[in-house]
Structure formats: structure tokens, C-alpha cells
Length: 161
Image (cartoon, rainbow, N blue to C red):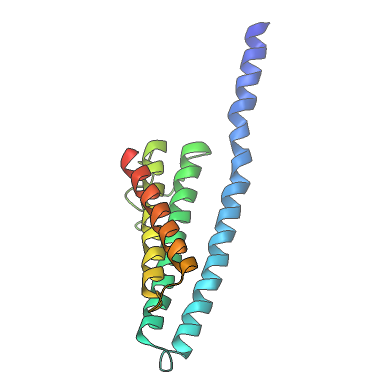
């Protein structure tokens, strides 16, 4: 009797992995929302390329790079997370299938995520330094210090992983 109960419990637990599928669908929607903001920023940057300063163009490009990295991070999490926790993605014969698909385990996914977070943080920090006013105020100095501290925490976390 207890063997049947145990088997039923294991079947329920195994099938419950599909409860994660809506989360991955939600992340796909978030990639679409990010794409809308990316196109909006690219359009805005293109319209004002003549009238803005070089540093404004650099900040705009860094913003686009930042969004591209976040989008790539989301896709990595969607693909790997779905394959690790829900089901294998059956596109093995497709010519465009990334080499890493099906080969990233949970530990590898964590490393890729922390690496992407460090890169995103570095770009945000670079944007902050490009925008530094000629005369930093006390509030700005504190904000710069916090951003560097947070970035270093991400870097150290990545090293420890």
C-alpha cells in the first residue's frame, strides 16, 4: 500500500514541473517588452543623433548594449531553465540550434547568469562615469560609491561561484 502512495506522490511531483512553463512564457513576454523599449530607444537615438553630444550618443549606445545583454540573459534562462526543469526542447536537427542547448546544467546556468549580471552592472557603471558632471556633488559622490560597491559585490560573487 505504501508503495502505491509513494509512486503516486512521485508521479504528482514529477508532473508538477509543468507548473514552471507559464513562468517561461512570461519571460518570453518580457523579452518582447524589452524589444519594444529597445526599438523605442534606437528610434529616439536615431532621430537626435545630429543634435546631441558625443557622450549622449555613447550613453545611448551603452543603453542599447545593456538591453541586448538583458535580452540574451533572459533567453539563456528561458532555454536552459525550461530544459533543466521542464522538458527537453526537441529541435536537435535544426541548423540554428545553439551548441550550448542541452549541455548547460544548473551550475553552468548560475555561472552564465552571474557573468551576464556583472557585464550589465559594468555597462551601467560605465554609463554613470560617462555622465559624471565636472563638479560632483556630495549626493553624486555617494551614488558613484554605491554603484562601484554594488558592482564589486557582483564581481566578487562571480569569482566565488
